Structures are given as C-alpha cells and as structure tokens.
Amino acid sequence: MNKAQLIDAIAKDANLTKADAKRALDAFVKTTANTLKAGGRVALVGFGSFSVSKRNARTGRNPQTGTPIKIAAKKVVKFKAGTELTSKVK
Image (cartoon, rainbow, N blue to C red):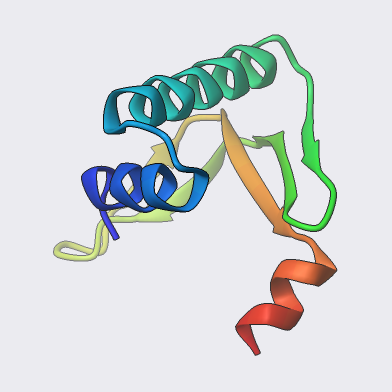
C-alpha cells in the first residue's frame, strides 16, 4: 500500500474527505518525526512504538571488491509492533 492508497483507506474508514485524511496523515508523520528527532518516543497502545536507537561505527566490507570500509555511527528509527497488531497479522 502506498501513501495515496493509505489516504483513500483512511478517508473511507473515518468518513473524511481525502484532503482531511491527507492532512491528518501528514500531521502524524511530521509530529512523529519531530518527536523522534528530539529524542522522544511515540507509543500507540495496541499498534506499536517508534523510537530512535544509536548504531555504533563499524567496519564493513565492499561486496564487490571485499575491501574493508568504515561505516559511520548513526541514529536509526526502530518500530516495535504491539501485541494487538501482531495478533491481527498472524
């Protein structure tokens, strides 16, 4: 499902216009990104939680040549699915 399909589904399920559904989705994404950037965590009971984790610098290998390369440290976004979401997928 892409963003346009998600907006259509939200609009249909919530009885909203597509424009309202798009604004709601954009606001969710923006708010989540800002919270994670500030070092916070977003937890939606039953759905899951978004958090930021730090990945340390490490040495990797170029798959074509096999030469070692340095991979810089960085922050990555993690999502952990909630039990309700997990049970609906099984």
